Length: 562
Image (cartoon, rainbow, N blue to C red; front, side, top):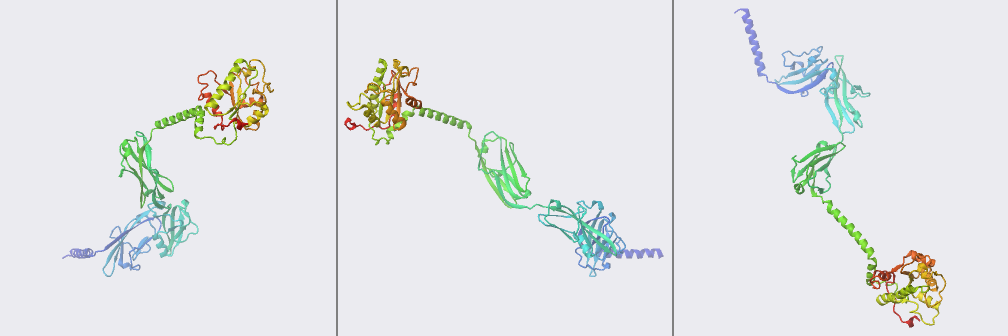
């Protein structure tokens, strides 16, 4: 056998022996640690599950990307290892890859530790891909901790800490933790922890960045139905309507507040003529609204039960609503018009028949104030007989002696004092007038026909006493006593009756006191010659009876009067 063949045989035996050893050795793989690092920085890695921190280098072999070339233990190399610890002293993009460290213990156990390294350019330091986990909570005072890989390196090599916020140095921060007190929106940003450490008398730098986000305080309440508040809602058939289901769920719980409509117990699905939209009011208090739009209200909708459902984080609330037909305004208008017409008619009728009503109720509600007033006569009649032509005198006599007594005394039961009829022969005229005035409740003044024209003779009425004491004359003693009782002592009410026309002068010729009474109350005009004028229930006599006392004076004999 020649030398070349012998050498080939030896190599084949050795190779077969190594392959056999590899095939029989089974190593357990750990999970893959992944790190995103920046160029120019240093990185120190020890597997988290490695229990022997000081394991000898002989038990470890580190390789990159499953290559057969082992990583050196030479500390002058930028990438080297000591036992289970892997050093990257000046990272570059070429250092990116999957590193596997095989740990073979003397006992024969084997385990593969794996770490994935991605190296980014320093200009990408603020990229989200490079940042560690974001700090987001609702704490008032927020704690920003240095990422564990940087913190562990700094503690291992007794390094020094410094901090930056959005690339600006934070003065006075030299610990592995930064506290942000009373955090606000201005405190949000990227906080970078920088560790400066030494290895073999050379200075290296490791850093890690994480974002601080301010999260508002969240409060989950039981859903409260804000709308609808009523159990019923009026609607017009054929018209459109929108139903709001508004729910208050708490504070800053937008993702846990869900309003919806159920129709007859079934969740609503969009159909023709019906649609549902949901909106959230942008504010601290979370109010979400589901709007159910009905294009045209149908008869079926008035039989449907609409239920507003509010779902919160833990509870559900509901409120039921039904639609009712709105009453037409036309019947209301008709009722209103009828009421107005009724009120107007009632007012007119009451005003027109006020005297009739007053006379009617007198019999049912008699006035008792006159029962014990001691009065004998209901009215003292004053009239003028002087300076009258024959026609006017006949009219006056007819009214005073026939019409007046026949109605007021015979049919109505009143008692009148009329001169010439009720005088007592031989009695003093002044005493007679004074006494009868005090015994009378009313003063009835009869204004003669044509009194304004001088009674046909051209003579004016004066305040002089008439020549005949048997006749009661306006302006004489009768009137003076009556005026005194009516205007000064206010003991008597005056009833004015006008016979015929007043004439062109009106009432200007009368005494001032009588003119004053006429201005206060217009005289009642005697409708001579009209049909039913003498009837006791005619309009004229009703007005006279209305002005007379409600209760007639007590009947008494002449001897009692004397």
